[in-house]
Length: 128
Image 1: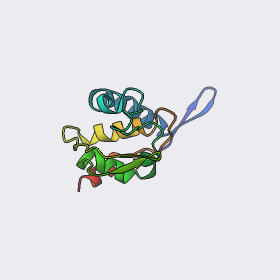
Image 2: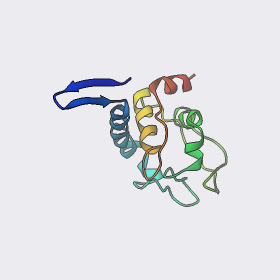
Image 3: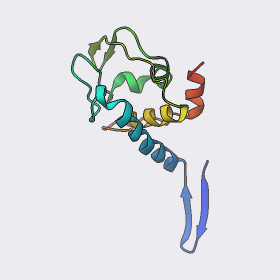
């Protein structure tokens, strides 16, 4: 959605970018409460234990998979930025669809990463 306003000095165009910015801000709060103990404040994880979220090729590659990991958890070996990790992540059942949307927008757009916005509709679909 694009909103166009006429002001005394001309036209101003606002887009959903502000909506993504708000989601990222809310997502940082969710991250701090839920994710940072394992993935660390800087998103770097712990070497050979918890994978990094910062500039993660694994996270950036597939939004649907990222949603599925938060919703359903993860079991088995994965490779992130060329390094193998094999520690289970439990599903984050305590998080609402909005919180999952926000935290994924935060981690996909922090620490030098730039990802497309994830919508609450995508998260709802990922629960199925």
